[in-house]
Image (cartoon, rainbow, N blue to C red; front, side, top):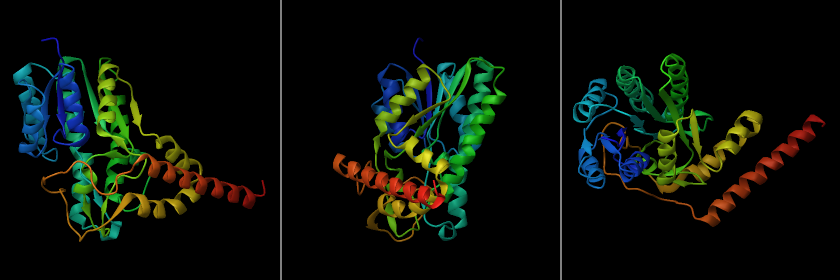
Amino acid sequence: MTSRVVVLTGASSGIGRASALAFAGRGDVVVLAARDEEALAAVAARCGPDALVVPADVTRPEQVDAVAAAAVRRFGRIDVWVDTAAVMAYGRFEDLPPEVFDRVVATDLLGSSHVARAALRVFRRQRHGTLIVGSSLLAHVAVPYMSAYVTAKWGLLGLVRTLRQETRDLPDVHICRVTPGSTDTSIYTSAATYAGFVGRPPPPVDSAERVAAAVVRLADRPRHNASVGAANRFIEAGFVLLPPLYDVLVTPLMRSFGLSRRPAAPHDGNVFEPRPRVEGGPGRWGRAKVAAAIGSAGAAVTAGALLARRASGR
């Protein structure tokens, strides 16, 4: 077999689904894992007859181990493992039920640790393999109303760095991150919300296919990180270089652009169990809205910087 064997956890929707289709389109063999077996079957039907479906919840380490075992049993090896399984919850920290907060962290951080452990067990035996972890812009900055997700992604950043250090004895084993900004997937509309409104991706918004293309490039030519998002570096710079100004602006910007105007009673979304997902959702952004939003944000930052310079006497 000359094609790669690619395992994808979180393959039922969003970036995971787009990545599965991209790999299959190149002739690679895909092993698809997520909680929703029906959604996985729909993805597999588009990936060709060799696609293998293994339903699994990444919060259950024994189920993740079963995915690895099924892949090796069927295809003899795993060349690439892509983990994009994630859930999200909106609301102030004190408004989130503790069990919702804990489950988001369990899925987005501990789930990735279970995947890494299963993948590295195979890679160390093979002496090669590439693990691509779905990170986020929110692993580098903090925003209100998303405390559980931010906590998980910051923790995942530390885990990935540690794994790189611990696999230096395996030159053909690579630990990579893909770091998307806002991406048009169903994670926002499927999220739990205790903020009064359905979430939405703030502009500028990339397609899942664009992030999937970055995932495939990482598999072809592994490197530490691939950032996908026109505003990522701008937002990271504001967080690091102008923290007081960032903290003043981030809450009103989040209310305006990170939450839709669609009211929602408190609910736990798909945090505990899979629910039907709809790709896309309320408040998607066209080019005009994106340009206006970026212009407004840029003007606000510029004005704030000028005020800061005046106040400092420079």
